Amino acid sequence: MVRSVWDEDLSLLKILTLSDLGMSLSMLHINSLRTEGLKAVLVTEESNVVHESAVRFDQDLPHYGTINGAIIGPGEGEVTSPVKMWLEAFDLIMTRMKAAGVDFSRILGISGDGQQHGSVFWSAEAETLLSNLDSSKSLAEQLAPIAFTLQKSPIWQDSSTTRECREIEEAVGGPQALADLTGSRAYERFTGTQIRKIRRIDPERYNATSRISLVSSFMPSVFLGTVAPIEISDASGMNLMDVLTYKWDDKLLNFCGGPELRSKLGPEPVPGGTVLGRISPWWVQRWQFNPGCVIAPFTGDNPATVIALSAPGDAILSLGTSTTLLLSIPPTDTPPKRFTSSHLLSHPTTYDAHIAMLCYKNGALAREQVRNKYANGDWSKFNELVEQSPAGNGGLLGYYFPLPEIIPPNVIGSHFFLASEDERTIKRLFEEEVSSTAHPRAILESQFLSIRSRIEAILPEHAPPLQRLVVCGGSSANPVIRQLAADVFGMRVFVAGKEGAAEGGAQLARYAWWREQNGGKGTFEEMRALDGVEERMKCVAEPRLENVKIYASLVDPYREGEQRVVEMCRPRAG
Ligand code: XUL
Image 1 (cartoon, rainbow, N blue to C red):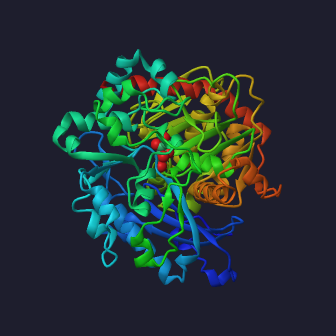
Image 2 (cartoon, rainbow, N blue to C red):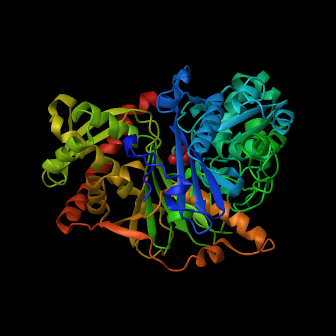
Image 3 (cartoon, rainbow, N blue to C red):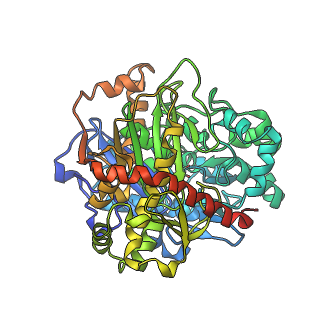
């Protein structure tokens, strides 16, 4: 099996060249632009992965000075990534793929996924530049100097728009009203409030912006040679689209970006699997792509994971840079409920279906900080420490928020409590009172208990109990983490044969290409049915009943500790 290139230990990366597999079929090309890097995957029409290449921003493009692909500041809560770095990553990954022997002329279609919410601001010159790229020059050298009005794109880790969040909620009648309309209450990272902030602090640049893309529509734009429309599922992460009709909402557009925002966003959002067009001449001339290669909409990393892994009754736990819990909600007669504590997204390919999501900012980075501080930066030591301490950690509850968190909003710092033996009361502990060996277990239990305490509330009404927990993302390879997830959630834990979101991107490219062959007809489910019923999921951990009971009894103390943390952090939340 091809290892995930997002695994913490990059030395595990194995790049398969085409000759490794003696492969001779047509291929689909998927790009995945995450916070930390860019990945390219080639799959065959039958969904076999035959090649992977990756670019890590910090290591491969160190001149941008990013940490985990991001730049923090200068303003409070601001987090951005240089758009030139993303373009240079495209140039570099193409060079790497070519060096590995990839024959680009055999690629039939391209799609992929990107980190959600991040935005790219194009200048008035962008369209002309994109459609007239010179094949003797790289993307970065041609586009970066003049195609953008913002050189640093706001990304999903940004939390600088609290003021805009309160304003937009007030304008539409409160957080629930905004959630009913767009699927989510206002969140700092969502693109609508990011746009409103930029318009407020830098009206000149805003006015000079001709188009605004999400990361997921920026990528196909580069392949198409024209700014691509935004895809419906990723558009649900903007607080600008009606989550039930998939259309931009004029009053939200006006509020965030004035009457001119509609033209800056381009056409109404498009579903996954649409053929956007053919690859632009720059790719044909410089990399020898086939001019017939189809470009399909890319989506967000989370919707792509759902497409790849979800079956009814599954919960997906994605353990990447962010931690997300994803539930696929099939089409129903009545629209699904919207909550102010979770997100509802449109499904990329299935009309009237949706995705419920919880998203945490302090995922892998927070775990890595604990590993570095208390386990010598070593995952085996970390695992050993987890296994040495008992389930429930003797009542220790730890809350680790190196970055201002999304759930609950704006909490920050590390906080500790001890639950009494009968779990009725909790007492605050100072960090010095916590044994240094207890942190690895504490952070895992804390991250999972937070989700466990919210999972029931986001299930659709009358939903049958969840059947299995499918884990994906970097940390899902860790057996100790898998077992702890099985125990906290009381569910059997499964992994899929392939890497989550990239496989979803593959299915989107394949869907667009397949539908076109089929005269523009056919549903995503019909295409997937062609794959047969082969069971791709493998059970990797069974819940241990005695531990499940311990965690069930810790949910209430966990909630109480979390409430205390929210109160302690309140003065900062302004
Ligand atoms: C989802 C979110 C993150 C990013 C990470 O709302 O903000 O999961 O998509 O790439």
